[in-house]
Length: 250
Image (cartoon, rainbow, N blue to C red; front, top):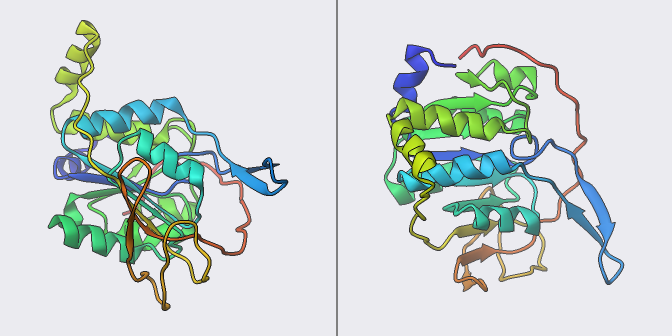
């Protein structure tokens, strides 16, 4: 992980983007009925990842998710962690990446991305620092610079966060927070939420047309965040257990 090449790449990182299922979670999904009898999706997130992502915020490194699925729980978790972006419903993830780069003025070399499945490969190939959890598909690992020791949902994202912080020389400050038990709260900014759908019924607003990016119509969420788009409806993807590997081939 701590190769000179990867450290040099990590020093340029100004934003960390990631998939959700299989990265921030172990990929398992649970369905339980709500008070109306409708099935609701539940996921489990690891607290280790949360602290690491919050620390990135503290040092001015933006964070965000680009997921092929849509889940209210995912959006809430992203909001709790102070993420800057929450793109959901994008099986093709290049369009969200392009929009983020255009909006921030950042370059591809400034982006770190964590992915575990085939739909993440196009973004991983463009990212300045391509990362995968130990549980990622073998094809994904082959295009990555960094493969974590931990599996998705078990602190893999935290490993990447710590590696970036250490490479950029922030770790001494982090340990200072530990010694003094003082954890500064980063300034809160509205989170950009973009949800893509090809259907006409939405939870919060609407989009029209087809293609990789929706037409954007902005409304305000209950917590003041900009909300774009509506509800994702797409076929269920089959979960596949991944094998383990040691190093990437990028």
